[in-house]
Amino acid sequence: MISSAARNYRNAYAGLSRETWLLSLIMLINRSGTMVVPFMTLYLTSDEMGYSVGQAGYVFGLFGAGAFGGAWLGGWLSDRIGFYPVQVITLLGGGIMFLLLGQMKSYPMICSFTFLLSFVNEAFRPANSTAIAFYSKPDNRTRSYALNRLAINLGWALGSGLGGLLADVNYELLFWVDGFTNISAAILLWLLLKPVRQAADKEKEMHSTSARPPHLDKKYVLFTIITILFASCFFQLFTNLPVYFEKNLYLSKPFIGLMMACNGLLIAVFEMLIIYRLEGRRHNIFYISRGVFLVGLAFLLLTLPVQGAGVAFVMIILVTFGEILSMPFMNSYWIARTRASNRGQYAALYTMAWSAAQTLGPMGGAQVADRSGFRVLWLLVGGVCILAALSYLKLGQKDRDRTEPEH
Image (tube, rainbow, N blue to C red):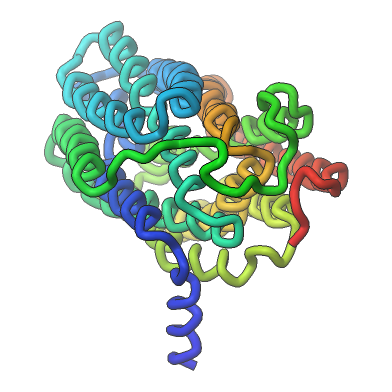
């Protein structure tokens, strides 16, 4: 049994390109410094800063607004100058902006630099997504994205766990670590991964729609709208949920960091194996809808009369497996609709959906929690997730055509 499990793990990682592994290593280093985002709300509402949950929500709204614009620019530039220079520039720029944001103490300056940071930082994502598609093959593309997500979440686990300890000492340390890991990732990318020529004929085109802009692909536009609904709920995990854990469940910062780290560790251990077993067996939407439904159930757990560390831990586990089922196949869904010549634009629209959710979700959730309490927020979030899951399912029923291959 042990040898069989080992063989499955080896097969799950087999056949991926050297460049895919390098991109994932760079992402691991970058995300190991992911400390500011999960603790930003706690930082702003701390005694040292003294801002309300509502004010912190507006800051996250600006973070999402900056990310929205940055995602569009990153995708546009990736199709014009290539994904390589965009990644290097945005990693360096994001690192510098993290260092500067940590020095800002007034609310207007915090808002301004948060917007600028997210604008630069989020321009990296479409370029990175385009790079993964470029260096992968159609038959291992979902696993290539899953490996990248593994790096993100392993880095998230390390960053969240260490971030909880550093936040107990001094919140400003989070900004320094986040900044220097960004800069280190840029240097490593420049040293290990050489620039390439991106031509539309560099690789065989996948089964896809025509090379039209993504905003003319009606099914893809609907997909991004549903994704905004889901992602607005999902982002509560990193913004308003830690505040609920501390203020309502009286959990310590290190314990909150440990739970966030468990999310990343579970993904690191199980996601590649699960994707290897599932890839190509069902339509991508099948897995997406089930995963989003699980996330909805997880948030509804927080409305139970009895709450505590145990319920919080089970909730994190449910969210994690919902994330494992949904997000890698979301990447497969949008990439299957592209050609090499418009991939950056599709990646940008997908990233913009998540960026819009970073504006709507944390800001809206914070206002709901401020005015009506966290229980109402979790009921609303759970219900919207389940609505999104049903909407994805409906989209899948309409999408049984040549726009996405059935494997």
